Image (cartoon, rainbow, N blue to C red):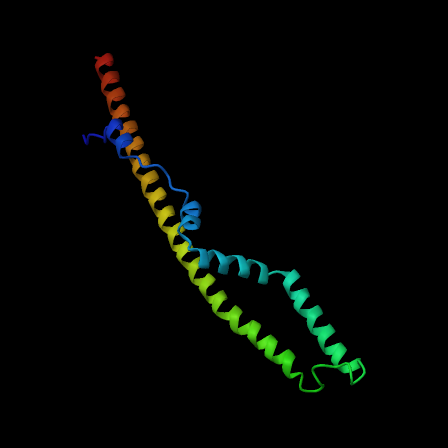
Length: 147
């Protein structure tokens, strides 16, 4: 009969479970935190509505206002295009940075899940071995009592 792992040894091998989200947030640099902060706000309906409103007002003013009050002439809207492209140029790398950070975070979560699952499997196996051992001992006692 295979001897189960002693409970004391199992308890000694226990490691506390890590809060991977807290570890992830602690490891972010200030620039990475800034990138996350920006992209959280850019990825909202509020930001979309802000850009839409800004665009409608800008284009509407430069099309409908008297020609002496316009500052970005129709149909080119060169200044509007320049500002829009600058916004895109700054946001695109930031979005890629945050996607990379999210990928690293997902990998860390998967690794933590694997550790927890491995630990749980080891503990379940030990409990099952103890139960099997108790069952065998109970059967042996019953056989002795029947004689």
